[in-house]
Length: 79
Length: 79
Image (cartoon, rainbow over all chains, first blue to last red):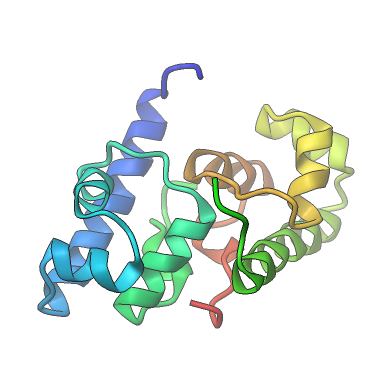
């Protein structure tokens, strides 16, 4: 897999920041979010730090666990 | 990798249908979209048919090529 471009790293970081924002607003720990989403806590931490090129399935898992629209997790001004 | 659940297949199909809708509205062929996004035409076809668990990076590539917000590509009522 080729390395991510600076823009991709920025987009991943923006996604992770949005997840963290909604998670903390919901009063959930990373572990609670991971449990609700059926994902590993370490994976959720990596996603929030922008270290993962997350897939559509996992975007929907996290959105569902946050009670958020999946589209609301994506930065709307970096497309 | 475990098989996709029916819900995940539905979410992938919804994503693909949205891509196709915006692509045709823009008057682009799959090949033109693929070229703009830096992706293979066959991959774009698979995405539109819901056959791929597309990654965040490629969601942004397609959104950028369509001049759309990445969030607008995700079904807002299946989260």
